[in-house]
Image (cartoon, rainbow over all chains, first blue to last red; front, side):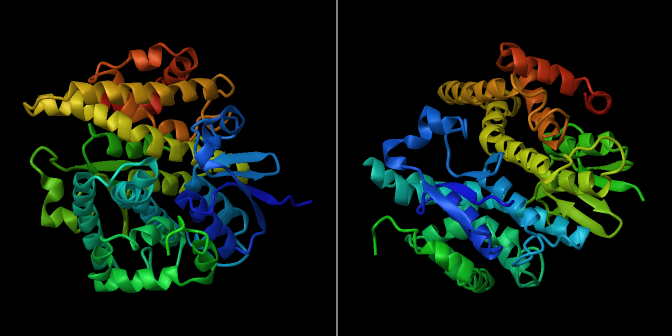
Length: 219
Length: 213
């Protein structure tokens, strides 16, 4: 008997969106269980029993409880590898390894530069703070250097790990989506190959289902 | 075919890869990259690793960078040789991934920045930021409290066996406990301390330590 996967999170949350996009790409049914961020539900004992780090999302599949969105996408992509889009190239060990390289690049190079910028524009104002230009500028500089590497890579292949869409590309979607709504979006659009790649991956139906919920009430 | 590992045997991220290769009994050759001289930022090296970082591996024609991708590749390629570092079932593998992510996102930055402040900056003749060190230490204490909780229920991070999730922690924790003088973070936590003793006394890690220090 297969159980329905439960995903605890919020539609506006980048990391929840990452996992939902993957579930949609694999055509896997799931239930989104809302976690009330504004009342700090994720920092309180019942939720901490699921994720002691007090972060969303959390995935439950029968007896298995997982936290860390990139561990979840890896699990879903592996468990349902014969269904939907092949996100991990499981038939070819070398292609699979290249996907892992660019998953790590997103995690270690891209994410640390883009996340603080998205935080300053979207989260800080909710906490009554104005965006810290120093933080934004410093991280824009780092992100620009990372995107120079991406521009070079994407000039010789359609997607990051090769000529195939993979989990490595997917992982970039949520933060970049918010980033494109900030005044800093030009660093993506002024790089021709990065821009083309972004337009391609962000127009995939699986992501469109998720991005509909990614708004803080702004137009 | 011997795997070439570009980096320095003393640097944390190459050590992550070398520890894995030693565990799996995979022959390797270290190709020195002079980090002090900035060799890793020069054009010839950027052709190997466009972000200007070590390690890089070359296995015949096949090249990879990002230490956590490299260890995943070798743990999968040699799954039937040496200890199984990945887990057996899909669920076990997911838990290994989960704790690898925790190391990468919840612990690594704190540990790295502490080592930067306490070891690297002074070595370069620069002052460290005491307030920042205090802040980082407090955050790391909170993270290690969670590890303490986890390891009170489980011998290793992902379950009953040593996996990549534990291995990935070795280099940074060693630096923290030795050169950075932060051993108390581990030794004051009963289960974290017991876990550290187990994982750091594995023959593969001891072999690497003898090569490096």
